[in-house]
Image (cartoon, rainbow, N blue to C red):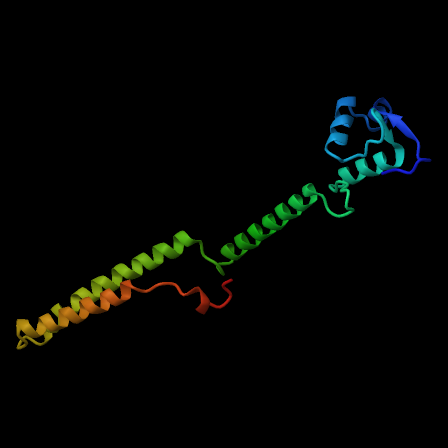
Length: 163
C-alpha cells in the first residue's frame, strides 16, 4: 500500500507510460501485479515498482514474499533443470530409461529360462546311465529355482541413493 503523500494517476496515464492498453493495466491490478488505491487511480511508485517486478518475473505479494506465480515459475525451472540433468545422465549412459532396463531384464530372463530348461537334457546326454526318475529330480529342482527367481521383488530400502 502506498503512503498518503504518494501521487496517484488514472489508468490512462499508466497505459501511455507503459505503452499498454488501459484494459491491460486493469488486468495487472486485478492480478495484483500493481496496487490499486482508489477506483481508477493507481499510486505512482507502487505501480511502477509492481510493473518492473512483473517484467523481471516477480509479482508483488501482500506478505512481501514470493507470489504463486514466482513459486510456480521456480518449480518449473527446477523441474526443467532436473529433466535436463536426467537427459545428460542418459546421454552419458550413467542412467538408462526404464524401457531399456525392462528390455535387458526380459532378455536376461528369457536366456536364463532357456539355459535352465536345457540342464536336464544336458545331464541326460552326458550321463546316459541316469534313469528318468533321477532326471525328473533335476527337472523339479530347476522348476524350484525358476519359481524362486520369479518371486524376486525390488527392496527400495536396500538400494543406495533411492529416496
